[in-house]
Length: 225
Image 1: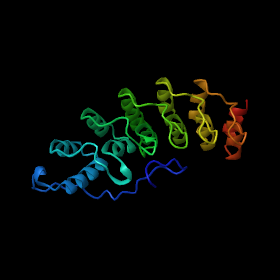
Image 2: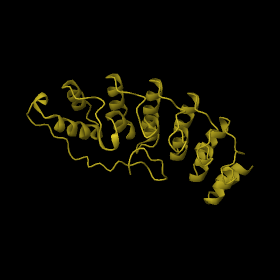
Image 3: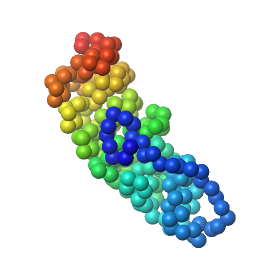
Image 4: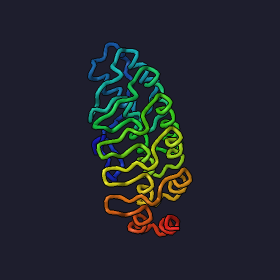
């Protein structure tokens, strides 16, 4: 699935990562195309030292890969804190986006532990990434984190100014996304932070009704109180 989409499935880039090899040829003698390929592979292997070598050899830190993703977007999408920090420290653009899909959104949907996602999101926020930027479907990073089921990330985003009750193009709030997926801990966190459980989506359904439709009976009972 191309980066920049917000469908129900997780955001995969379907790249063939391969194996990063180090031959004896100096990096400054390697063709630019080969450097880009080496950088792409190093990013997804988390090879910080090789990435640094490639950057030192003059490779563009804003190189464009498949789907138009930059190295920083690639690193954020797997919540690789060390690589994200390196790239930010070397001047990568924290405001980069593809089709309104931002670095924070990529990090909030990463195939990684919540701890890794939390550290990466916190780092991006510390470099002034906008927590209220919406994608083309009007989903915010908070909605992505709620859909993913990451209560600590949800709390962090709200602490940095994420709007709790913003609704996407279908009228879904972060609470509704959590209810649809049965994420009890996220729902509890959102309610504790002041989320409005009486909001309705475009089908005039509340979070409780959405939970019931998706057969999350425990969540429904909790929200219906």
